Length: 300
Image 1 (cartoon, one colour):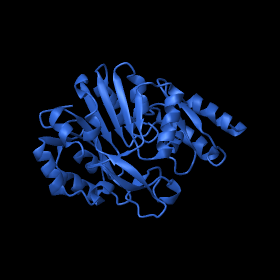
Image 2 (cartoon, one colour):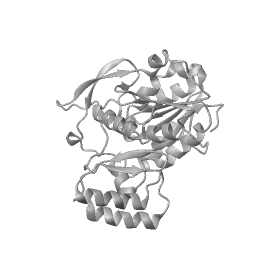
Image 3 (cartoon, one colour):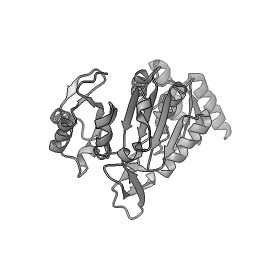
Image 4 (spheres, helix red, strand yellow):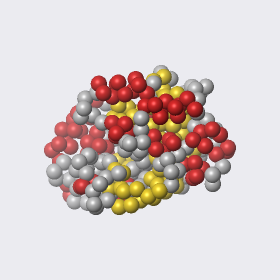
């Protein structure tokens, strides 16, 4: 690390990162310091959250830069909610689109005695960063699979270079860029045939796969019929732009499998309501929010 990096690391340590940063005044003060230092620092930096640590990079399009700017992890409030569901129960957490581990690392670290974590990500680079964070925390209850998840077994074009993409921090499938690579996609149904899911009290599947959420859900139908899964997924413009998605097909899926879409307060949403809410959202914002897909007889 450079002298400036070492000094900025001390600043980070002084302000003490949190899963969700509570002190708004301290957060604003840190952001002022970050703005001053951002063109001078290189990193990576270690953010110590108490029960776990995460590397944060200063690169322009690295998703971990969010932590460096805000001293909190991406979707921290959802991580806390999922952790509450898992707490003290023998659990399995599936992280679909794990990136560098903003969900997996805290959940595995906080619940190391009662939770197994399995990560899926099609990006070599994301898996590399995830392994670095696993090593940093000396975690033994996480498995990583460097593949995509979808509705059937196949190979799909995938762009692993953020410099080739217009978005910040998210790798993408179905790009037509000639620089894309072919990566393997599996179904979770096939994956779970080799696992004994009956040993778990809670099975939570988080899907944040840049518009491939419905694909991954369709690849879970057989497992859904056997177990009470809790699926945590992102509803976004990327999802509805995916050729496999349409409202009727999603509604049929919900009806056929006796499922409902809710938030963490158990408020039920229809596909039509979500589409209306998304259309009313600022066009610059891709994501409407995170929702739960659960059996109609279940409550969170």
